[in-house]
Length: 236
Image 1 (tube, one colour):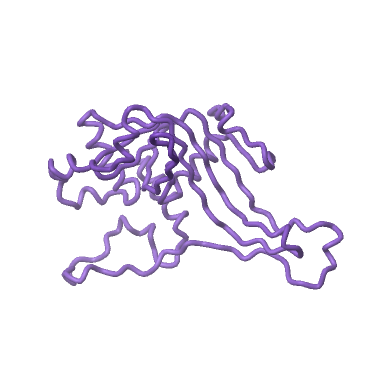
Image 2 (cartoon, one colour; image 1 turned 120 degrees about the vertical axis):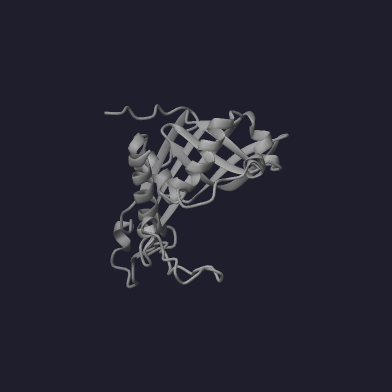
């Protein structure tokens, strides 16, 4: 059994600790079933928070962007960062405004961001971001050019501390509010995949590839992303 993360001053959950977890599988599942993460950091004493596509390889998180990005250049030397991912699962309507809430899953991970300078690792990482989302797609695509690789920066972060926090229950009314005559309950929230919209110049003879079957219309996005990540791990 893999040991949980050891909480430190940055990651220890103090507010509603019963909702918290340092279990690696829980943290990883929240990261792997998300399309976007937010990376928080400071530059010259000013705070920034940047949304980005991320992917995980074991205890390493990667993200990428333009080589001209100020954010990525600043993170290169080993900048301390905090990366967060949040899934909104439901709107919780109570019998008082104070007890309204939300059901959610979130992960917060900490480490030092470094630019990937090794050419082989950088190329592997850039191919991985596609296959992590759409396993098997790189085999169909034209290879990346040298200029495309040069124009893209990749950042890696070893996870030093991490925690997850989850709320997945119904209304937490005060006992005396239970008889108040107003509707209360949970309105579920799900991000759902829509129907594919082919490129306007796509020949009719090219069908939707089988490796995109996880992204069927009407399916929950987080489930599809988790399935794709699991398949990518199995095939890597």
